[in-house]
Length: 334
Image: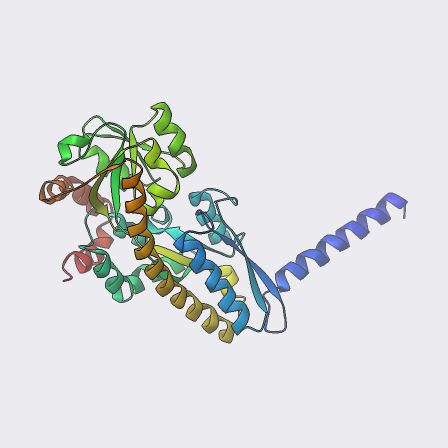
């Protein structure tokens, strides 16, 4: 055997051993594992704080058998890519908005229908019950296990041109939306120009006029400094989309039943923490943007906006007739 052949065999053996060790990290209670977590937000954001609390509880309750490293600020990739990486098991867990999740999980897309939830408290009640269970089953079928439903509040429009008080005010505006056909159709139903793009590109795009504005919740609008370049924030509250702390099914299946119970309980307690932190942060964010010169306007009557969404619902249900029962379950709830 030549020296080169010997070196190659040693390298192959080393690679096989490394792969075996990596596979075994979640193999049982005797193994120590460090999970990789994805998060798009800055470290002091409600989501980020709750995720760190989740990781700390799991580490404590498993006696250090399962620890986590959470990568904030989207450093492991943008949201659609990270969702796919969780499905593949490349990333172990993450916190995702169900809007982009809808591209992979049809049931999640239901929550992205404009005005489908009547309020944030109603969304909590439904997601903690049968609606959340139904969506969770759809996620598991695609390789994702929900651990807790987080809040992202209500999303509203902001732009650099004018206040929005009626659907006609959206006409002609170039609006950034998340990567989801429903959001494109929502803006187009009001004769606006929808522009899907990565969240990190929004500030510069508004500043340079590539888009006129975007839509998001108050903490996101404030924490990204979008209010510096888009001074009009209109409380349309058109989308109340839950977020999910969720785990790769591949990683989940490597846990023991006892570890699964610990992880699930930690996910639910972190969701309760995040919701409380969210309410506090949302109120503070609105005060911050107002102090910074933002003109915030409420919508006295949202009927016109809701009526404008009829084509969005019709098109969605025509393409997804299997989602009719889930849509009706939510729309008919008190």
